[in-house]
Amino acid sequence: MSGLELFAAALGVIAVWLTVKQNPWGWPIGLVMVLLYTWIFFDVKLYSDMLLQVVYAALQLYGWWQWTRRGNAIDGRKVTSLGGGALTLSLAIGAVVSVALGAAMAHFTDAAQPWLDAALTGFSLVAQVWMAQKRVQCWPLWIVLDVIFVGLFLYKELYLTAALYVLFTLLAAQGWRDWRADPALAR
Image 1 (cartoon, rainbow, N blue to C red):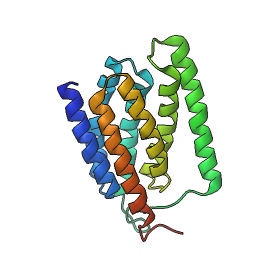
Image 2 (image 1 turned 45 degrees about the vertical axis):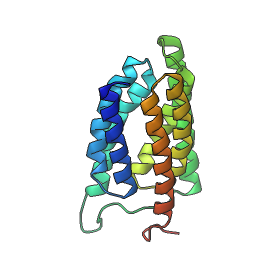
Image 3 (image 1 turned 180 degrees about the horizontal axis):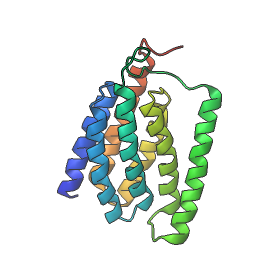
Image 4 (image 1 turned 30 degrees about the vertical axis):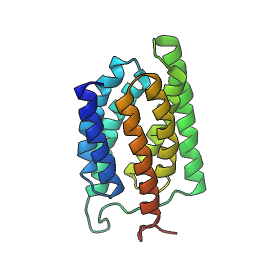
């Protein structure tokens, strides 16, 4: 555990807690966290996770924009639910990204866990886009991913980060409960 990992983990808890509470400040705080984790994951050879953090940086900006834009017809983004077709298409895209990235990592790098890391990356991208769009389905997907991340980080001896993902799992469960109860959610 390093001071950098401790600081990044603290920012992560704050960012996810603010997101659960639908506070847009979670996005810029999350941006700092993902930039720090880019270096942390590079250092332990989790290259797919490192690349994921780079993409997360762009998605943090996208989420900030989605949650704060104003206009005549838009008063910030409201919690919504994906239909079956959009849900299936998004998960299929996550699977394709996972296989392509896993193959690349397995054949061209010395990645520690190329296939698992790639699968977590592909589906985390789906969950992050859904979260930026305030899709209620982001939370159950995050719960599954976070539980698997805990195991990966324990394996890589990133104990603080594993503990952070246990907290993320609990926050995702709270987010799922809270967002499903949101009056803006179209049933």
